[in-house]
Image 1 (cartoon, rainbow, N blue to C red):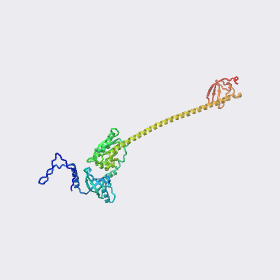
Image 2: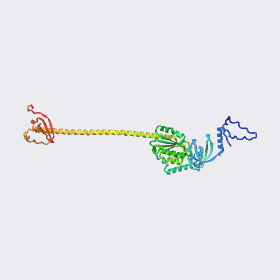
Image 3: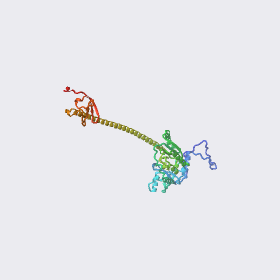
Image 4: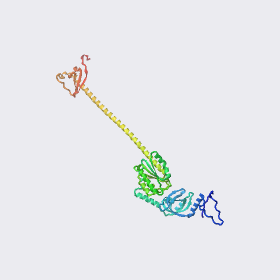
Length: 450
């Protein structure tokens, strides 16, 4: 039975004429060559009716599950694509839902616990009914799943690409690159759209401030010619960063939900893995399936906004390292200055100690000389005071030179043998030939002696 859901009659217009009356012969009037005038609600209802009546009440669908998303109340949504290889961005995509009751029924039929996420990247056969949603989408309601399933052709092709990159030694090539220590240049490859708008304002502000060089390399990520165009942009980015790869970054940016078939191509993966500058793939939200570019890139981020945060984090790290280096340099200069000061003080103290030692040695020598002179004078005066004059030498004979004593002579150079002759300046002559003149000695008057 055909079911029509007419919510209201089509509005009358000035141009429309009243429907033609049925002829008296009983025949219907000829069809209008321009077609009937339909209200949007009527068009919607007729489309839904055509879908429901054109499809069997229950049918089986062979498809590849490309993604499984959990929903509320224990239900899951399946994204279905054709099972016969890659058809590009024009391949039909349908949404199927497994409710909580259907999941329990499938688990009972399989005689084991059932998790819908195990269907991801599998070719399966589903038993479904069709629903026409209010947003003009067809949704399949899954009631049963056949147990036979296999890995999808898309997943097998993906595995072949990754295995080829692994055997060529390129799968981990980007991951082995070091993080840019001092970020100077960022090249952004993006299709036109919201993904670039999320990061453009921040990067352009940094470029205007002279902090960063930003290259705006627009290119499509999907559709005819997207793969060679993306490879050309990657080669252009490699040329811009040549010689300073350790100070650059390449961003692959697109908004979530938009197609990015070129990021799963073998040629694009090879171009990314052969770059010597880090490549960051920020190609949508976490609910999107990871592309091959996400797997082989230096870093994979869920949104373009996080790519912007990564750039800011790298710049903050560079500033922090520069500040730490400046602090270390200042500390080294201060320590050097303190070392020079300590060395100068130590040198002055060494010179002062040496001068003090010299003064002490001179003082000791002076004291030793004074004691020798004093001892010699005492011995000489003791010799002069001997009462036995016979022991003295005759005037015409030279006096003996006692060892350790000095010779005492008058101003004329004559020797003095007694205290009565010790008048006027006296000269002391030592054993080593040195001489010393002493003050004038006054004549001794015996009458003044008391």
